Amino acid sequence: MAEIVTIARPYAEAVFRVAKEKGTLEDWSGMLGFMAAVSEDAGMQSCINDPNVTPGRLEELFLSVCSGKLDEMGRNLVGELIHNGRLGVLKEIYDHYETLKAEEGGVLDAVVTSAYPMSSDQLKDLVGRLEEKFKKKVDASVNVDPELLGGVRIVIGDDVIDASVRGKLQAMAFALTR
Image 1 (cartoon, helix red, strand yellow):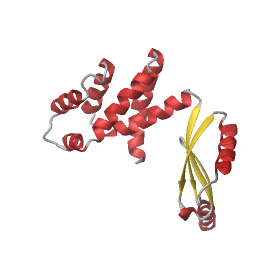
Image 2 (tube, one colour):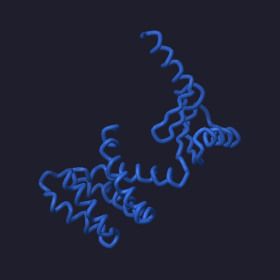
Image 3 (cartoon, helix red, strand yellow):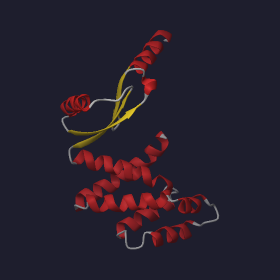
Image 4 (cartoon, rainbow, N blue to C red):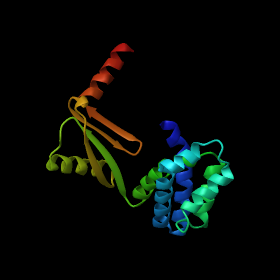
């Protein structure tokens, strides 16, 4: 999984830079979202993974499905991704682009995984602390994972805050076996 993110990141960052320069952040958000949805379609996936479909034919098929939804730069991106065998990472490019866009707007997405359901007051308190720490607005989604045993695990971008009992036990076990 990390490899896909490593491949997608430079594309997302390049698109973000261009979109920011030209003031087209929302346009690119729509185009990338649409391209990602098309690339995730089962029929398109079979074309992407079929060695008998030439890159030229794949580009023609993909752009025909996206007809009227992409500008010239969007069509160029599709061609570049196909040429480099990277069309399958469009979803990750879109996800990373959206993260960059949110950070630019001063909003960070946080995924909070808790051992038990959190009350709205607990979540509000946690979000307040995260906003204070990161100096940005935080938009948090909460998942429940009983395997954490207790506490929470928070992922914001590349930052991971593991305050779970399970995480502390793993850290202790690692320290003792060193």
